[in-house]
Every structure is written in structure tokens, then in C-alpha cells.
Amino acid sequence: MSSSPTSEIREKDLEKSQKDYYPQHVPDTIQEIRPTTGPLAALWAMVEKFDRYGVEVRGIERVKPEERNPTQSAWDACTMWMAANCNISTFSLGTLGTSIFYLSLRECFLCILFFNLLSTLPVAYFSTWGCKLGLRQMTIGRFSFGYYTSLVPVVLNLIACVGWSTINSIVGASVLRAVSPDSDHNIPVAAAIVIIAVLTTIVSLFGYKVVHAYERYSWYPVAVIFIILLGLSAKYMVSGPYGGTGSLEEGNILSFGAAIVGFGLGWSSLAADYTVSMPEKTPSWKIFCLTYAGLNIPLVLIETLGAAMTTVTPDEYQAAFADGGIGGLIGAGLSPAKGFGQFLLVLLALSIVGNNIPNMYSLALTAQVLGRWVQMIPRFFLVLVGTAVYIVLAIVGASHFEDWLDTLLVLLSYWLAIYSTILIEEHFIFRGGKWTNYMPNEYNNTRLLPLGLAALFALCCGIAGAVLGMATVWYVGVLGRLIGDPVFGGDIGFELALGFTAITYPPARWLEKRLTPSRIA
Image: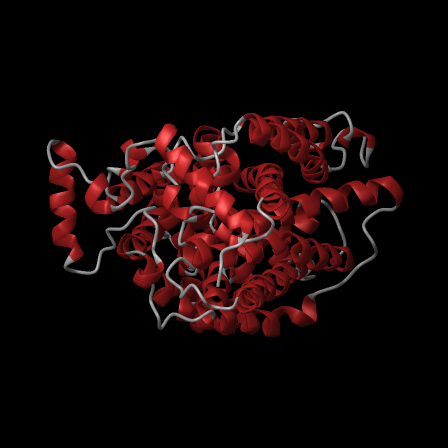
């Protein structure tokens, strides 16, 4: 079969570009990137010893089709996100609907349902990119943002991974402390945080295979515990009247929705990391559907349970929530089960490990996208550094959980809306939705990757939209202030960030391509 005129032109463009603009080969394998002398060489020698015990050595280097695991199925895409979201962090998000935004249970459920169904679409779609390109999520961003502009989302994702691990550890520690709330021998917050961090680190160090193996089964007992909690507390839950009317109600719904989007969409910067070893011919529709189900089943059900638990009527439940936070509320709900309930509390606290694992594993991969100088550092040590950072932050910020959670979630919804929009528009508008229009082996080639100015311009416009529409505890935008409460406003930063980016990226990218025809990766 003869090649198409388009493919012939592309091959000629690539040949000319490589000859005229980038004559040298760019290192893209572990053997080529790994230093042979100096302190880093000693680190690699140490990692080789760990490799014998199954510690993953590979970083962001492309997983080529012949290197994939032929036995890995798309079902792993479902169980991965079931475990990552079947935990008390998801539960704690649901509690914000009533405790922070003063919505009724019915309003909370509707927000949780529709904002989750919307925000997880990019996550499910990006999951299909991993097996098609063999690249990690933030590395794929270079084909839209360029080598240098991609550093902006990379830094933001590093902050997000550390921030999530910090908040998760705080809520996990609060549940561990709730096991013996009245005891003089209650576990200290710092000790509880370290326990969660150590368990997370063990799995994260071993890498892709062990991460999937752990997440495949870890959600089963957690799901059963939440069902038990529902059974013990359902008779005390009340729906109540709708929380306010008119613009006040709208503002609270939009602000809660922004927090939900920040949680669900938050996985979009990690999505492809967990499908890179699947066979290249794995049906995209199967990965998409299973990922979408694996995300939304726990998100919708557990967030709704969290919102419902804050409506329980016994005074002792409300007092426990006020004094002990999420841990106190769950502890009160499981208190009728006596000693067995305390055992379930311990398991629930440790469920946070399933959420922290993808954050820490992807943190190391994201750090390597900063440049080849970081690629030369073994992923093993990047995980340890990230763990040390979030342990310190969690201990320091343990008393500011709700404010930290709400602020992090809405900020995530802003930049990830921009990031997702640029990647999707690049894929469909400028690459025709075809994987053959990518050169995944050139992920390190600064001469062939886009210049990145179009993405930078659209990013700035998206940030401007977010600033105009945001409504956080520390700043309310000009447009956000026009919705809802005149002081707290209503958060439309996510919607404006998406809209501003979607409008500005296509013309800017068209101009960039016209001015830089040699950048064809």
C-alpha cells in the first residue's frame, strides 16, 4: 500500500528538520541519561541493588510498544481510581457542602453528581493517551506547551501532589486519633502523619506494578466500612430545606462545585501515568469507560455520604464533629459498633494511603519533566524528598484543614481547566485526533517540540479569567463578587478559565505553527 501524500510530506519535514535543526540524537533511555561518574552515579549504583527487590528504576522515559505488559488489562484503569477515591479524603470533600457552603443534603447531592460527571471526563480521556503514546501525563504536555512552557504546569502539579498528600495525611491522622478520643495515650498528630507517610512511601518506591497491585484490592474493605457507617447512621440523617434562595444559593452551589471539580479534575495531571504499560492496541473506549466508572462510583457515593453525615441529629455526633473534625464525626458514626468500630476506624485512616500513593508516585515522575538534569536523579530518591516535604507541611498545617482543603481544591480547578483545554484542543484541532501526528520518541527534543508561546499566551488568558471569577477565603474576583453573598461571592473561576483558554489557544497556536514550521513533533 502506498503512503498518503500527507505522511510523505510529514516524513520529508521530519527529515529536513532533523538534518537542519537538530543533527544530534537526544538521550531518551535510562542507559543514555544515567550518569557514569560523580555522586549521581553512586546513587544509581545503590538503586541497582534495590532493583533486585523490585524497586522500579524507570522514570519518564518512553515505554515503547514492545516493552509493554501484555497481561495488563483495562480493568486496572478502573480499580486504580476506585482505590484512589475510596477513602476519607473523598468523604471529607462531601462534608464541605454543608459545613462551609451551608447547602442542604439535596443540593449537595445534585452538585456532587453533576460536577463530578463533568470534571472526570478529561481524566478518563487522558487515561487513553498513556497506552497510545507510552508517555507519562506531564511529559505529554510538552507536545502542546513546548519544552520550556511546560515547566509551568509541571511546577503547579508538583505543588498539587505535595498539597494533596499534606491534606490527606492531616485527615488520616484525625481519624487515627479518633480511635481513642478520651484516652491519655492518644496517638500524637505527628506520629499519625508519619505512619501514613511511611506506608505510602513503601508502595510508591516499588513503582508501577506494585502500585496497580495494591490499588487493585485495597478499596474492597474500605467500601464495606463505608456501607457499615451508612447503616449505623442513616436513621439520624435529615435532608432539610434548601440552603437559601436566589443569588445566595447560586453562589454557594458554584463555589461547592468548584471544589468538587478541583478534586475530580485533579487526577487529569496524573491520568496517563497509570496506563503506559498497557498494550498499545487496548481499546480506548474500554479504558475510557472503566476509568470513568472507577472515578465516579466512589466520588459520587462517598461524597454524598460525607454530606449526609454532617446532617445527623444527635448532639453527641455534632459535638464530635466540632471537636475532632472528620475523625470525630466518623468515630461517632461507628461508635455503636464498640471495639469493632474502633478497628474499622484504623482501617479507614489507613485508606488514605490509597489516595497518597498516586500523588507520590507521580510526584517523582513530574519532577523529572523539569529537565534532563532531574531525569538523572533516580525516581527512588525523588519520592523520598517529596515524602519528607509533605510530612513537615502536614504537621505544621494540621489545625487548618478545612481552609487548606477548600483553597487547594479551587486552585486546582483553575489551572487544570486550562491545562486540559490546551491539550484537548491541540489534539483535535491541530493533530486531527490522530496518534500518528505525534512523535513520542522526541519528548526530549527541544528543537522539534512546539515553541510554547501559544500555550503560554492562552495560559495567561486563562489565569486572567480565573482571577476575575474566583471566590476564595483570601480573594474574591470582580465577577465572582457579583454572584451570591456580597462578601464571599460565588466561584466561577473554573468556568472562566476554561472559556478564556478555549477561545485564545486556537488562533495563537495557528500563528505559532505558521511562524515555526520546523517544530513538528
